[in-house]
Amino acid sequence: MPPPLRRTALLCALTAAAALLPATPAPAAPPSSRLRFATCPGSVPRPAAPERVECGRISVPLDWHRPSGPRIEVAVSRIRASGTPPERRGLLLVNPGGPGGSGLPYAVTKRARLPESVRRAYDVVGFDPRGVGQSTPVDCGPMGGLFDSPGSDPVPTGARAERVYLASLRAMAGDCARHAGRLLPYLSTEQTAYDMDAIRAALGEPRTSFLGVSYGSYLGAAYTARFPHRVGRMVLDSVVGPWDWYDFDVLQSRALLRQRDVFFAWTAARARRFGLGGTPAAVRDAYLRVRRELAARPVAGFGPAEFDRAVYRALGRTERWAGLADGLRGHLADGDPDGLRPATPFDSPDSRNYEAANRVVKCADGPAPRPREIVTDLRRTRRLDPRPVLTGMEANTCAYWHHRPAHRTALGSPDAPPVLLVASAHDPVTPVEGARGLRRLLPGSRLVTLDDDYSHGVFASRGNACVDETVAAYLVGGTVPAADVRCAGPGLPD
Image 1 (cartoon, rainbow, N blue to C red):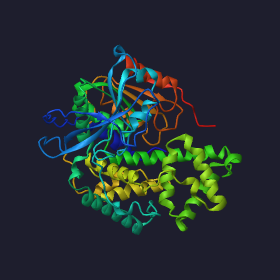
Image 2 (cartoon, rainbow, N blue to C red):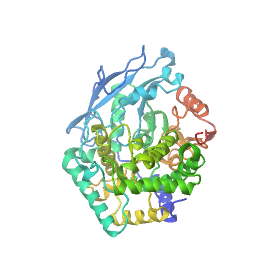
Image 3 (spheres, helix red, strand yellow):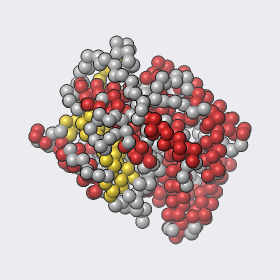
């Protein structure tokens, strides 16, 4: 189900235009901050002995274009390379995505899954991006009722519901302006890219090697635009394309519709196991019945908004599909949605920070949609399917943002060394079109595609030897494939 021709043409035009955007001149760097490591907060897991994780903080300008102005702190974690000194290749900075994902614990959890050769070669360094976790966390307050439980139906149907939907976006933008205060204009990806280089300098490294997943790919591309000559070896996994955030969100919403249809067919083929029907249409009817019942009678704070968030999370990883199907069956059997609830409550402090940072970063990165454009795209999406999953449409809020950015975040550079991009062929969260678009802004780079795969996050995540060995050879030995690489994927789960 491809997006409308207008949207496809726009995305192509944006990709071409992005290559022509001049990068904002890098500001003069302030004197390097020292980075002293000590013990980590309790939120950071401990690695298996004998390895240990250490944490520290670095002071950086709130606005890198005014380096003598107010400063904030960025929290950093590190696990040193386990190999011999001749094996060491420097630092590998990592980011788990978002915007809004905490990277402080990610240095531990991701490193545990990296190939041994990579663990031996690199100090794995995580950090909470500015506005996130331990790094001056941003707070948007109630966010226009986003954390109300149960939330209102997130799919507006009819003119009145559309007006209410736009009013909620305006209220969310107002809450962010009131609660985030001075931080609001300075939590952009561009500013975070400067923070990354400050971490490199504080650690005394000449180059930044980087592994960024999902939004982390966007952050890595922004770093190459600002500091192409300081890029070491960079892996961008599950790539966000070089588009405005709103256009990316629309593309993702259409990909989720395709993925949900695949889920319906997969579940129907296992009718005896899940009991939701033997055809995709029957499974879809069961799915919609659960959603209608929750919209009419929410159960213990679980309504259509919470349901859609659970579906959004499940569709991105095929290992979660069985849990989603079981949850649908459980609700139909006894009216209990507990099988659909996430382990972490949506209104937990970490989730609140994530949701706030996600929107603040997106709205600081570039142009905003117009309210009329939002309504038009909502109607187009509903014509494709009356009940889409709109959970990922965070950049809608930017239509009413109080601090409009002066320019779009620049991505990529012809002066950067070859980068390795990694993608799943059917990832609905970051569709493979993003990797293809970004590659055009990174000459000499290669794309590693995991065919017949439907999940988000590939390297050191899917357990695919072809992908992991190709990426490890690049990170450790600098081996850039002669051409793009296609790896055989696992297909759908049994």
